[in-house]
Length: 269
Image 1: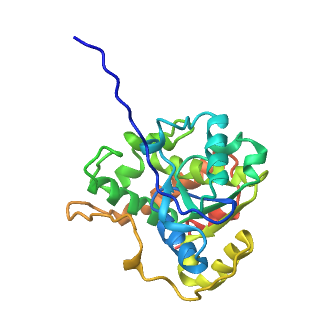
Image 2: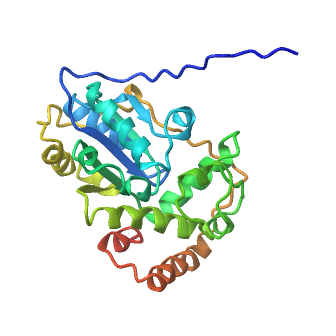
Image 3: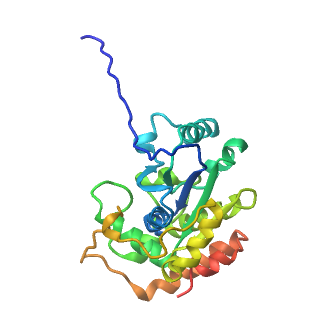
């Protein structure tokens, strides 16, 4: 038996600007319209890129970034800034991962969080998890049973704390960014509102990033990448249990003294 050494290299494509620009982090719960927002930003401003977005995730970055170390994350974002990165940074992490990164680093970052109707978001996530070949999460064919089940599998990497079910997980993710926004500037975008009133939402983003909108129309979806869901005829969306799911959602808010208008938005029909 002999000892050998192998070299593993990680290569990440980025869009590089002429000078350093604030990094743009787009955060969300999975299936909240993340790529729709990123693609809209790319098309509307021709500055930040979604075509070469950086997927802030353990794969492929886990070997070079310690996601539980504020120092490691700060160095990563500082390095992107110094290298004039203009690729949008996508993530689904709980905001506490970013809470203690260097204050000077935070000044070099724009934070946007996109949220979606609670039921629609979990429904889309449920379909996605059942359709993927990897063990991203539980594969349960009845929607309500999925909502009340414990999050397991690869998706738990985004959690900062244990969640009893997917309802709680949704709340903790969204609320973490609301709490984060009390000390850090975060632009919250409603996915449904972005689709219905694209122009005014793009204006909000324009004010945040200080760039003029060069395209007033919506982008052609075929020109951009999106994560697809594979629907299955075997899945059962039991509408009769939606009110039970919402009741649990509201009880978790009450038990944790969580109050914010956004939580009213996400359970509107």
